[in-house]
Structure formats: C-alpha cells, structure tokens
Image 1 (cartoon, rainbow, N blue to C red):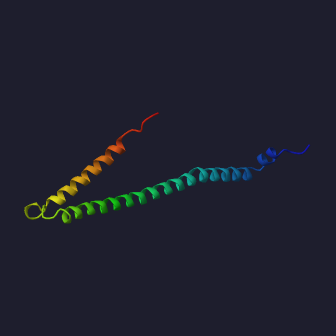
Image 2 (cartoon, one colour):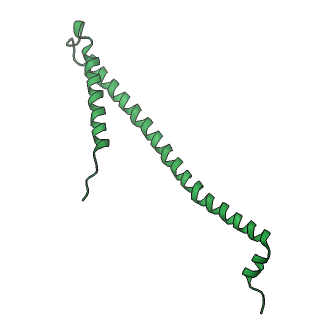
Image 3 (tube, rainbow, N blue to C red):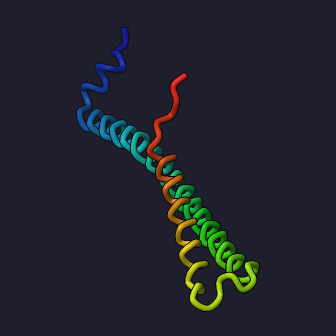
Length: 110
C-alpha cells in the first residue's frame, strides 16, 4: 500500500509549518476582519443618524424660537424680549430629559 497523506506531510516539516501558518492566518483574518467591517458599518450608520437627529433637533428649536418671536404679537417685546429664548431653552431641556429617560429605561420582558 501507498504511504498516507498524513505521513507525507509529517515527513516534510517545512510544508507542514507553511500549511499551519496559512491556516492560522486565514482563520485570524476571518475572525477579525469580518467583525471589524461589521462594526465599522454599525458605527458609520450610528454617526450619520446622530448627525441627522441633531440637525433636525436644532432646526425644530429654531422654529420654536422663531414662532415665539413672530407669532405672539407684542407679548414678548420690551422687558420680556428674553422670554422666547428661555422658553426655547426649556423645550430643549425637556426634550433632552425625555431622551435620557428613554435611553435609561430597561426594555420590558414579555
């Protein structure tokens, strides 16, 4: 009978070491590069989403300020010209508090 493949590969240590090295490198690439690509994609979408949400929030707050300044007539003129800014800041703080509570809240288990 002929010599087995295992005995041939054991008899050639350089080839065996090269094969093991190739397998280890391929395994490490599979287990590190793939997950890192997924993590990079996850982070990219997260950063893009946070930029869009922040931009939208700023535009909404500017809209609230503009509405308070223009649509309330003479209510916030003179000594009360600071009131629209305070009310807009209050809306921003309440919004941040609601978001903070939503983030801290644990999901319900069904």
